[in-house]
Length: 553
Image (cartoon, rainbow, N blue to C red):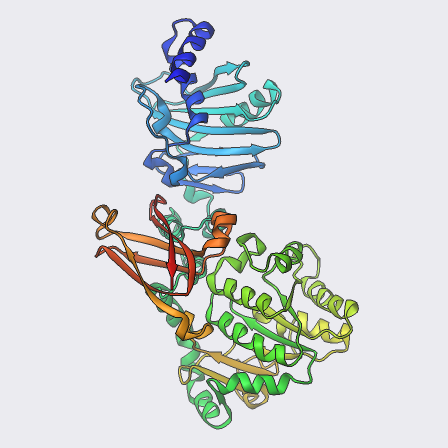
């Protein structure tokens, strides 16, 4: 209350009795003391690179590249206990922070009560004492306010220039569908922990549904939903995607599996046997199939017993691997695909078993395949006793007779090491949980790329029981008494983290479980391993409903 009174006195000295200016500036002072609020309009924001769109308002603008724009619907940005009339804080639709120089950026939208005669922009406030500026741009329908508030000591001219740039770029009556695409949306929210929110962003995006966009939408959604356990929509999409391949392969492949296949748990013993005298084993994955990561995890121990001591992972950033080996568990910034729970389990287990994890991918090189191969070879250059388990994406492990030269072929040439290559991507069949087939047996089947040593058909259903001791798994009951009434019949997103990881890295921690549920009862049941965890529940509007520490014993 003292701050509010002092602010009123100071602002009257600055602006006299101009109440609208006093209230407007007072809002910013209080905004710095609390956090940001937003209207439902902000849900329709789309940011792609430096372009901003709000489809419900039909506006767009150019943003600045060094500004981190934050999601206003998050709980931590909500304003509480502010009761000032005629303030536009509830019309806040965009908020971000610039890093160099450091300042806050706000965009407000307000419907005009009276219709202006012209469309124009103007400098609304230039406060050189508190070092913030407000620009206004309006048309007959809307007034938009671009507000920049200094965090550090910076020149007022910087705020004026940047604010003017954003304001001048604002366009009314624009359509997001003309410029945005599904990949842009997924990339914009790649660090977002509420996958239900991102899912709805993609599903509701105002993008024309032609054949090309339908396939792009499929790729984006299946990649997103692969991070969510036991998701029916994901299963349906995978089954539909593989249906044609299974139908084509069924007759010949089923016979081969029965005669030549190594099935189910015998697969791991077979791979241990054939890898014993190898220096390199390469296993691939389809990036949106987490069950591939379970096989990789279950191979870690038998390969370790064969002397393998390095785990080279395409999905791990080269810049982050040394930190990962010291910290002993991944975080989301460890690599693009690492946020998927079973990728997190895979890396934790590798570190627990004593593997040295090495990132080897290189997107900056003109020849990515050759650069990958050279980075793996460096392991042997630095350690002549090395034995390396390489975990790669899709076609990188193809080593012979290919129309394109891939990483495995380059590696074989420059190292004189013949890797054991196992492909999980090429074949599909419903016969067994796991089937291992030597590639030479498929030479007569057309449309099958046999440029590897073995094929692995993987039908594992991801679960804790597959990768952990079932005796250490419990059914946990989470009480929802305080929130169930307000959420009945609504979808919620549940995320579970290891408590020690979340308490240090918050949403940058890699979850051990993601789930979407519809609230029908006052309790939720899910399986968890023994330990201490943080459970977060959010809704599709990205509001934080619950954060709770739980113990499973």
